[in-house]
Length: 525
Ligand code: FAD
Ligand code: SIN
Image (cartoon, rainbow, N blue to C red):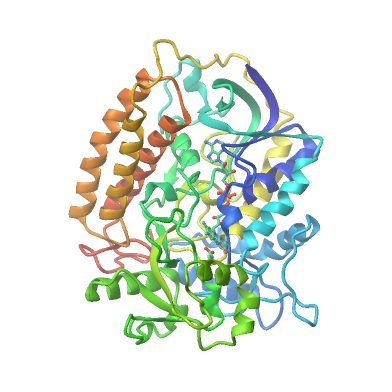
């Protein structure tokens, strides 16, 4: 079946929904998500969204903090664009009904997180993302120009390749015509033709054995864009959150927000001693890459599996008031955070790199945009500053709408795109082949491509991955398309890109630390 829309939006997190809401006055929008509308990284966000609100804060301070965290690898134009647009986008969120916490005086109650020189994090308790997602869902659910497709899994971006042309990364004029999409209820593959397509498919956490991301985070958008020959960059900069709750076996790993350190919590070894000052004068509030590496080092030196985060010295009622969900979650595990220290360890959390976009959210493929975690805007550089990601997503979705709207008048649907061809394929005999390969990829990445890297580990990871890649491509060619096999292919592509880009970088910078090149070699690259 072929469906036609002016705008095809793949992903229903903050990037996808905010794009859909802003594009809808100008044309028909299809909004796809691979499970339900609200299963997204956005829903899990805790700390909040950064924006300059009141003096003594100002744009320059937020810009400087972002550049420092990014370790000399940010694109300054992108940094300025995002930060200076933040207050306007916060207004949009408020108009859509998002309820940020306020003080008794009626001002926004701003938190502070690692790497921020001022209090500038707007939040809703400790579950800001859930509040944003619910408000956006409400707006989008009754919109007459937006059709929502839950349980629709995008498989491939449509380009000239699907018309039989050879497309390479050096092809100068690749055009996006929409996507092939699997309806997971009927198991039919639909052709969605669109005049403009947005990839807003979120993160890649499922590439690792432990992550704060929900299971849907399999990097589909990045893998699809890569197969369509879009430019992908900075994949080596995988962010590990320093303080995920240590509770082996739980997936996703429960996050203990950085805002709790902004509130006064400190990191301690198992014997109760503070250790962060040894690594950075900003102590527990140093940027994330530094804190994660310090914890990793302390754990390795002592042979421990976690360190402690201690908030017991703060007023118990205030702690419960600010962090009610963390309090409840820990209590369920027998940890009363007002009396007991919280066991934490670093875990995969975010990807700074992804599909390269320009200052209008455009990828290197015509009529294909990307926003949110799957994109690489240049804002984060080599390490993302806390709470800059929800902000980046909403700002770039806005820029992409502004760029896409005037183009749709001039673009025709490409009716020549053939229906998906699954001739000669059959149901995979053994599903276990797929699930085992998935687990193998996670293990390879967590063992060899984690916080501290080396050439030897990266090369070993690549050679292990190549075997799984060949087996999976063979299985894919013979199998009827399923979400499972597509996700496996996608995590393999993402893992491949991370390793390839990591091997290419002959220095340590931001989130990429290698024992073979421990220094930052160049000013920027
Ligand atoms: P997501 O919100 O992840 O949405 C992705 C969407 O794409 C989903 O709807 C999914 O179904 C869809 N999708 C994916 N693949 C396909 C496919 N093949 N076909 C169809 N649909 C598909 N950032 C902050 O700024 N502040 C925070 O406090 C913060 N806290 C965080 C806490 C946690 C636990 C986590 C996991 C992340 C946190 N982040 C935070 C990061 C931030 O939440 C994400 O980067 C951001 O929400 C990403 O938004 P997005 O719209 O790009 O993608
Ligand atoms: C957190 O609340 O610590 C996460 C913030 C972020 O990822 O930006």
